[in-house]
Length: 483
Image (cartoon, rainbow, N blue to C red; front, side):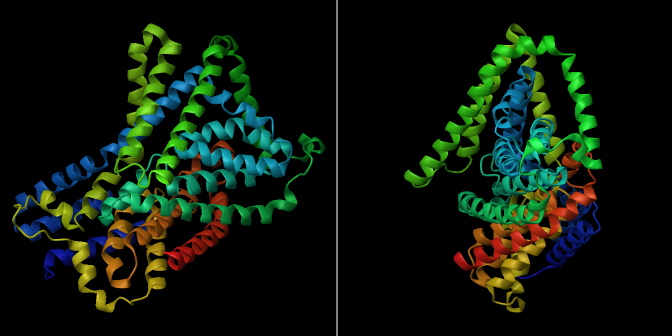
């Protein structure tokens, strides 16, 4: 399609969005104004501009609602487990094997990764920081190293692949105009390469400060950060002691669901891997999220009924409400951002701009990239590391998810001109956006980890920088070479 003034306005707004992210400001306002202006210029009508703003949000909400739903159900399940005390009982067996700092490092990384895969890092952080970190620090792991491990394994490695809940791959795939299944396996591999590389670098840098024998460490050996943390932990423990009678009442069902829930989720994971490996295609479309969400819903019902009995009729509504509130607080800004970048693809512009079915559907971003392909170096290394850089820039907003529509759309538009699979570029962009937004900026979700452990968010982000960037460069190079 021939470039129009609307195309240039779309390009200008896209540059504005990236610039706004560089200044660590929100991008919702620019994308809404951008949607309005593009529609006015393209349709030649102010009325169409108002309609497009609404339609863009509506189209994005329809496309992304399954994401909100699965997040809501998983958070509701976690809240029902908290009522039973099962969330704490899940961790108790793990605490017993933390015999020294080195083993604690490994266990903390694995546990954070697995829990974050199923429940996302943000709701998992309080559980891990309250129950595992004290045991790890007392076993000989420095508090700052424990914080870095949690951020890299959770906000980085688990969230960047999002292999179970599949929010991130769905956002990337929709914007790139490809099937989600083409991305999920690639981002899983890249996330593991990045995460394991980063964790290895962190371990090598911290190994001399890790205590080998936990019995040799007393409170006199704690630094100021660790002493401050344990003062807070002691206060929380004292508060918990006041509720001993309530905890005793929860003992029966808490123990039972501490076994039922992990076994159920393990069965889900095994079945999903089994169908993918032996069945060929695995789950199609949103079937994977539907399976996980359905299992979570049944577990939610069972846990709520077990603890609340007749009051479960009311309590389950509270859990679902809390789940939806969390989901919309976390993901609501993504809707207008996705709506704007969906206009970059011809698959969505018809609905957003209210075009007739027979009318030509502009793809503002794709058309711009196609028109400028002669100026883009036909080099996979340039494209791969370029999309990684774009992803890292979009992650400066502290989320990472808001940049996925942009990296996905750019991947779909650039792939043909540089001779790369769009799923590979989208996977690289997803890695840059989520690792950048979750581990490298102090105003991201790592604030939760820093706050709970009484550490400086800026210092924690600084500690993450070299390991994470090194891991991303290794993973990107690997992706370019093998795919």
